[in-house]
Every structure is written in structure tokens, then in C-alpha cells.
Length: 309
Image 1 (cartoon, rainbow, N blue to C red):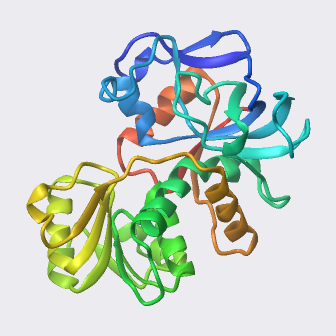
Image 2 (image 1 turned 90 degrees about the vertical axis):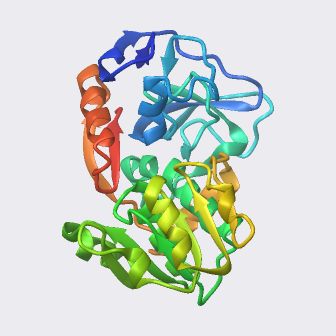
């Protein structure tokens, strides 16, 4: 099968197109014929070597952790799925990623794709959508009437977080650049802060929950908008211990979860969750290099999709 691999850590130039063995599956797995995947910051952070202590994989590494496609093989312990079923998943984080024509996936991590969902839409949801869900629901215990600040609302995680928070009846503020104001409002944001011209920490107060996607000074200033006892969850860096006495904080590392993915599929079917696809590239060496370059700017709108079939 065709795959884009890395054989060493480095810049986007270490991405190589190769013919590799089609992966074998375990008894509790299925093999998914991949139709589309997407780019997430973990991809290029791992490629650069930033995560090698946490994720100590052997080379060659196939990056990518979103898959949407059809089932081509089924392990002997797997029930409830058939060859040809349309599924999507956030597979376990291994060196057998999704920049490839076939992907092994543990069956409990799968979710059926709604009939109306395209493969590109399905590939845009798992990692970013589950991250947003786990920040808001698992950690934040979000409920109707909560005031929630979501940073970088036009990005992958942010765009899902706004939509999910609104389904719970929360009041949502978000930061983004001026050109994305109408976009984040269309997702449901109640308050928009242009981070280039305004200081969110001077405009907001008494918030229940902050979803920090940026880290650094943004995270530090976010504590100013929280009510005492409020919560801050970061996907960028570990929150400082300095605030532990007054607030509940967490650095969230996504746990793949098929049941939660089914809940996101239900929201999609109800018209309450729309995957936002920014740009699409082909599964090729150049396609992945271009996609990584765009992701590394931190200014991609919505999700970057890789079309496999």
C-alpha cells in the first residue's frame, strides 16, 4: 500500500512516500480502507521530535490519527460490523498512523458514519471533535447557562468546542482574528474578541470554564476571567501550579473513544455539529509537506483534509 512515512525526526522534508506492507490486524481490530484523513498539530510536533519522550516509536513512523473509510477485514472477535461498512475513528496513537491506504483500528474505537456524512467530513471530526468534547463535557462538566471562553475559535478544536458548548446551552465567548468574526459567530459564538486589537482579560469576567488552545501568556491571562472555583483546561501546556488553590485545572491529552464519537455523529445528524473543512490535499509526499506547512502557521481555518481515495 502507499503510505507517507518518516524515517527520522526533522522538518516537513523528512516526509517520504513509500510502498509498505499492508498492516495485519489483531483479533479485536478491523482493517479500514482509508478514504480520508486529516492533519492535527500532534502530527508535526511528533515529526519534529518534540514528543519523542512521550511517544517513543520505532521508525519508520506513519503519522496521522484520523481515519474515515470502509471496513475491508474484520478480526475474529469483532461483532456488529460487516465488510464494506462506512466507519470513522481516532485510532490508538501508534507508529501505524493514517497517512496510508489501509489502517488497523481497534473495533471499540470505531463509530458508524451517518449516511449523509462525506468521508472528508468524517475525517475532520475524530481527534479535534473528541478533544473538544473531553475538554467541555468530561473535564468541564458543562451545563446550561455556563459562561465558557474558547480560545482560537476558528481552529480545529475551537470550531467544534463552540458548537458543542452551544448544544449544552452555554454562553460562549471566543477569540479569533477580525477576518474570522462572522465565521465564529456562524458557529454560535455569543461574544467575539479580536485578539489582535482587544484584551480578552479586560473584557470578560466571572467565567465558569476556559478552553485554552494556546498556552503561554494567553493561558496566564485566562485565569483573570475565571470566577473563583472556575475551571481551565489546556491542550497546549500544563497549567501553572500557582493557580491550583483558586481554580480547577488540567492539561488534557485526548483519549480515543468510540462511544463519544457516536455522540458526535448524532449531533451531526441533528444538524448541531458541522465539520469545517479548510483546505484539502492529496495523499502524496508533496501534499503532506504542503499540509504540514499550512498547519504549522497556526492560522488554518477549520480542518486540513488529506484525500486518500
